Length: 408
Image (cartoon, rainbow, N blue to C red; front, side):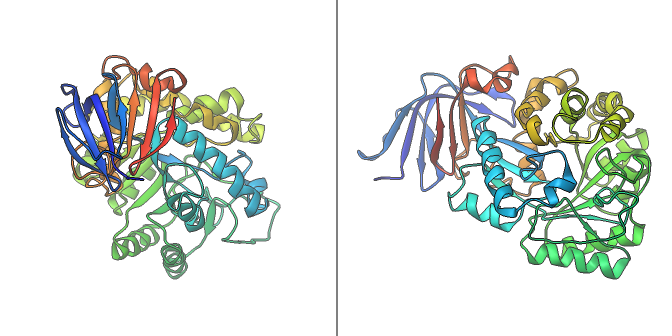
């Protein structure tokens, strides 16, 4: 059977221009967009899809996910069989695909095995970028031991969140180990967080020498670094040390905005996780006293997004959801729509993400030569972002690398 697909009568969404093009035909061959125009022909054995004037756009990207987090209880997750975790991760990724996500960037827990299973089609899900385990100092956001737990058992074939390491020599080794395992990016825990049991959200983590050492290893491997950071103090020092993207960034200040632009860094807000934790964090498996810490950053998130957006910071779509909260992945669009235009929201989840992932020649646009990662939606998301939020109603097709994986 031919691997050629002809999509007829599709209204293509131009993510860079933020506009719709006139209806046209799109020929896909060998997993890529081969040709676009009107009245195009394909081989007789090609599959023909009539888009019926619906909107054809790039598949969505989520730059901050935890595909192995079937529970929000990280200590339990770490102690769970990796075979069971792998099955649950497959379910989580399949659901992401059905929401229109064709590329996701994992922020701690996924590994080369899951990425390979997706690439080989053994798991039906979005393309998976992974960091392995996030690098954390002792007592940092990736150290899930309670104050009375003195033992540190680190098994890197399991789905734990963090890789605890201290001192320049140890962080260099940890970074090199994650790179050896195939990491497409590294993650640094550069501040305290909500889900970690012994740190403070307001703390900075790792010395600047340690931060620069990790970034140096990533640069040597030609991969980017993402940094978990909430406060302006943590964000600003991480940017100065060379990280590519700040994750969360709820408590940034005007100096942060200047540094984002000066260092050409990216911001990946994850606003939906805080609303979700308040509503159902305990039910999802997180301890009540950790969920209570959410209020320290909940209201600040939208203010931080507004400050960054108005200041011209480059922003990418991310969600950070855990456990049963994964189903809220598309709600991030609605929250951000209080601040961002629909065209910019779509850019954040397509072309901006592609640039952050260093995949701008592969994904994020509907153009000849690009990977055929496409979704077909009934409606115009430039006019109504709800078209993307209600996948059950509006999403009609998901294609990844030329293969139709979801059809309504």
